[in-house]
Image (cartoon, rainbow, N blue to C red; front, side):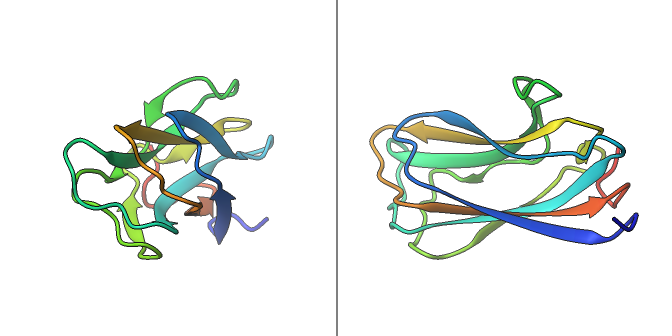
Length: 134
């Protein structure tokens, strides 16, 4: 890979039905990556609600995938979500770097009763150190 080149990975997840932490990718064993931004879309509409909603966020799961270091503010939430409409987020400056073998994890947090359908998450990252590096 070329250092500094942009990469994009997309994953489609069926409704987890409850809170879940889902591994998205693992940083290569010989260098680091920097998560720059992410976006997501649901196939179902979720009306704005303070009782029933979904939050999505990215975390550095460490090399075991179990750590919970936030990389960005969550997207989704109480405002609702229109089906097949993309919501976007950016890595917090200084938080986006994953070093060798660290796992990028999607944190799916469900409040109340929701049925998001399929969730498509797209992550844009830089091979090496990018704008959101530590």
